[in-house]
Image (tube, rainbow, N blue to C red; front, side, top):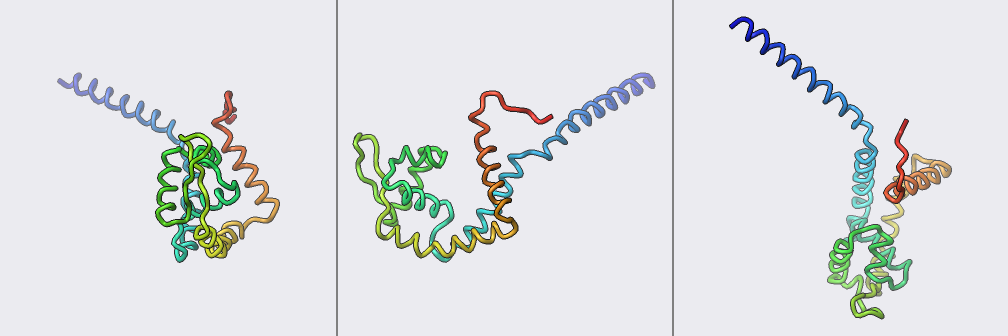
Length: 172
């Protein structure tokens, strides 16, 4: 009996040591770029949403309206590609803004596509929300000088392109 207890304790100790070694591998996850980016994105989004709260728009809606404004009358497919978003997400967001008469849809050249058009009401909403957006923008970039902001944008672009690379470069 004593021998069995010793063997059992030894196995338990070996199992515990193995688990500790496996879990220590997870320490690398503390440096997860995705987690850091998502945390920063959430905080920044909350700041923009807070600034835009009185306008009736969230920053995601504001950004979509701005993109439609800049592209003219893009198709939903073009918007999804430009925003690197799922087409069903774009459709859902556009429907909500259409119900509020900020956007309208018109048939495109192909019956399967629709052009997204910023309405006069949508343009007015953008113009009235712009000062609030600018305030949020200024708050985000306040701690950065122009060179740092330029570098940040370049780094975000570079990191955002990672999924397009065929041979990702691992960290050394």
